Length: 119
Image (cartoon, rainbow, N blue to C red; front, top):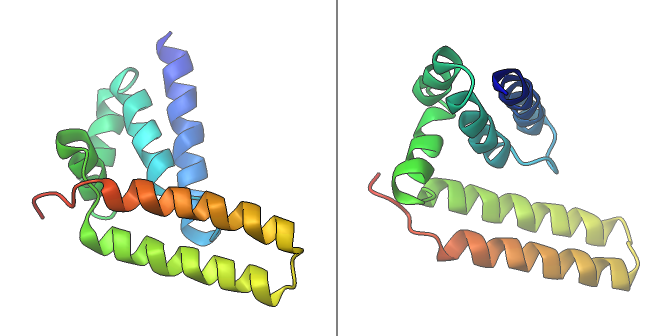
C-alpha cells in the first residue's frame, strides 16, 4: 500500500509543479494531496514538502486550521478574474461563459468562506 501512496504523492507533486506554470491547473490542491499521500508513504518526502518555503506554509495552514491565507485568496481571485476575462476576449459562446462563470463563482465562494488563518 505504501507504494500506491508514494506513486500517488509523486503524481500529485508533479501536477502541482505543472500548476505553477500552467494558469488553469491549480497548484495548492495537488500539493495538499501530495502531502496527504506522502504522510502515508514517506516521512522524508512529507517533511520536505511541509518545510518547503513556497508550499509548506499553505499546507500547514490547511492542515492545522483549514485556512487559506488572505494573500492566496486575493491572488486566486485576480487569477480567476483574469481567466474569465481571457475567455470573454476569446469570444467563447455565451453558454460556455455561463458554465465557466458558475464554476468560478463556486470556487470563489468556497475560497472566501474558509478562514484566513493565523498568518
